Length: 353
Picture 1 (tube, rainbow, N blue to C red):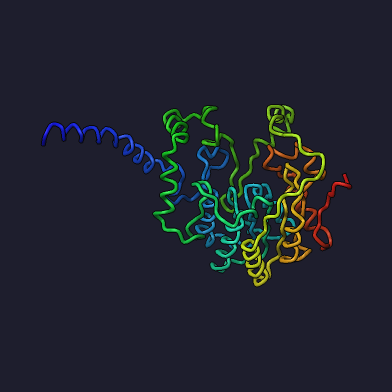
Picture 2 (cartoon, rainbow, N blue to C red; picture 1 turned 135 degrees about the horizontal axis):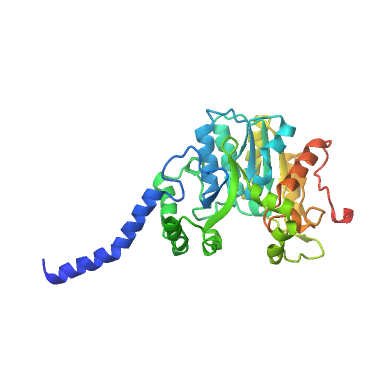
């Protein structure tokens, strides 16, 4: 072989070697926990460290455990639905077999796919709680990226295509900048938390219900709320003083998905409720969209907590501007299950403040 060819091969080997090393690290450490099957995808009372695809974890945990536990009640929605705790919901449903079937950044197409999966598997649907807002409903498509890609059981995607999403994300320089030092030091530094690359929040996890609880934050708030909210003051921006309405987002595609969800729930004689989230932005859920939900699901099933009301008025009902706290979810559950069934309820209109 000519020296020039040898020199070229050496250059190629040097260029490819880091990629091979990184690929080996990925295969050995399985950072996103999608290469292998795990009895539990989280360790209770510890930080998750690497943000996992919650859709995959929820569906995979259901599939692995449905023979062990006779699930019959499900909470679906985006990460806001996490704070509807099973222990609170079971006081109204009397079911001891509840399961969180949520996903980060959940879309209507994801909720629809999960309801269809439950129906196809013949899993009982005694109770269903749908946690919605205009962000959930505004798209009938799945968001892109490894955090949001759907479990193949929902989409029929090939295993190769699914795994490729995560493999490509692993090579993101921002992720590697945090993950590789963590592997060496086994310590989470502040810079690693930027852009949610890593997560240092300890959480309690219940495998049976797939429930996550951030008890450490609640303990801090109970002990000294000022020390918790003081550094977060800049997050809680000033909202408009007059009611703003969210844009209409329920179009033909969304209507079709919503109708099929209703048909499945009705055919299973499911006791279900739809909750429209009390978002910090205080935007009122679009009246036309609300009318569509009521038309499809019936006035007794839809509960609208959006807009300006005593929940959204108080920033301390939220951890940040995206997630409200468990005591608010607890209150909502108590209200929607304890009253007589009425037309679509919006319990705190602005004129009641």
